[in-house]
Image 1 (cartoon, rainbow, N blue to C red):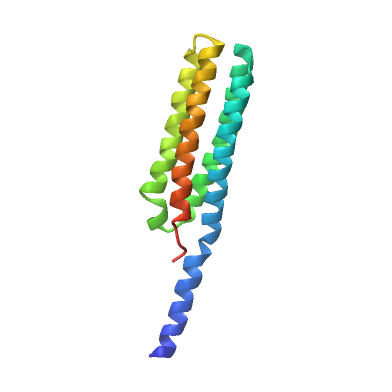
Image 2 (cartoon, rainbow, N blue to C red):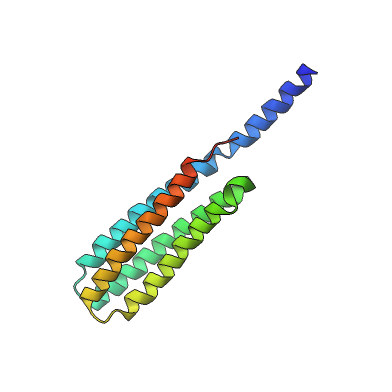
Length: 142
């Protein structure tokens, strides 16, 4: 009986920890999203003209779209206990914050109003990424 359990346990362990790569990919993407939000905040607040704000927004959205794709891919390969619920909601919250930021930045009546929006978004996205990172850090491979 004990001999039969050993291979089963080994298969369970290897299968569970195989997902560690997805865990690391998710962690990396979340950390990069946090750094990108902070970079966007800095570049946005340094912009002095509407055109440079628009260009920075487009650059930021391209980078974030790639990061969201990486997050989606990592979640797609994780066990359901990791990717369902909280983690999916974290990513959805980041996407929603970015969409709202996009609209608010385009509607800003002045460069200074755009700077304030970028500061607000930067703080919000940093918090959302911290929440997601805490969730990733709390995952185990079992």
